[in-house]
Amino acid sequence: MKTKIWNVDNRSEITYIYPQVEEAATELQHDEVVSFPTETVYGLGANAKSDKAVSKIFEAKGRPSDNPLIVHIASVEQLKEISSYQSEIVHKLIEAFWPGPLTLVLPKIEGAVSEKVTAGLSTVAVRMPDHPIALALIEAANLPLAAPSANLSGKPSPTTADHVMKDLNGRIAGIINGGATGVGLESTVLDCTEEVPVILRPGGVTKEQLEEVCGKVEIDQSLIVEGQSPKSPGMKYTHYAPKAPLFIVEGSLPYINTLVKEKQNEGKKVGVLTTSENAGNVEANVVLSCGTRADLTTVASQLYATLRSFDEYDIDIIYSEAFPSEGVGQAIMNRLLKAAGNQIISQ
Image 1: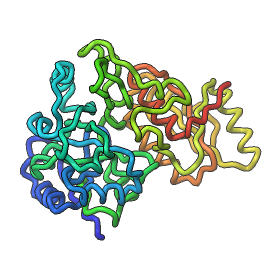
Image 2: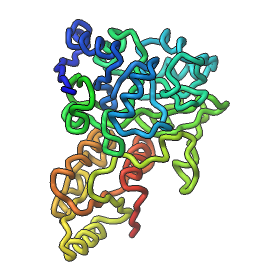
Image 3: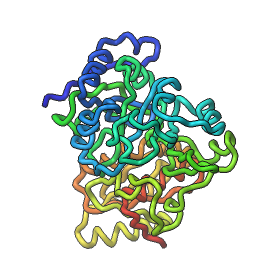
Image 4: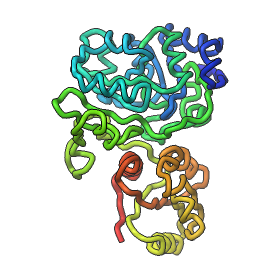
């Protein structure tokens, strides 16, 4: 299969008239798979109603079939065709955060989407992306789109069309190139089927922001207690990993440099993932900054691209500094822990 590239300017005032978006939408209507930018990462979209189309997502990514997919929509009317939600909390969350990086897990309407999307569960995960190209594509296709991140399963999520091309060239019908994404980490996943909403995956909307809108919000215990089984099936898998083994270091810069020197003395080529404040004081073979500690949103937006960059240097081992676990830092540490397979070195 030849993968097409559609270059589209992402300025909202002209996106809706682009013929490239119409062409991509036609591919979706024919049960093909298309990658498109969102405000978080690039998604891999297919007709959420079609078993055939959804199966192509799993095949292209090499994704386990028990890992449910998020359905992307462009209007609340589309949501009402998928879910029978009644909660006043859900209404408040939609008003406050949609379009945006928040996924809501809701009761599903039987038969509204493919069973492959929900992995046989009684719930469906839905979000409305805050990106003009994504919204234009959904509207042009006139379909809800099942869309996980557009990467090979286990690799860092893609924040540029080039990342998608490196992973999925020849595996999918096409990629809409709308430039780099913004948030850089996937959406927050919030289970709204219980009396108190539960965060299943931290992301672009923080716990603090959610609680300002709907009161108490809990966190799935698997995110904070080691050994707990996650409520979301997909969270049990390793994700986001570069080729070299990654370790998170809870310690000072001198301690990180000591670890680096030990591996270098063994003949290893060592990489360090750090921030702009610390980069000049790290003594590794390859030092990559993913943003500034003064503004963790910069770390979030650059994290996946930086993890992917290490693959270009033939690194033997990577050490990453740790980050505070408040606000967006919770999502950053969640992704780093997944990428590292929970391998932590403490000083």
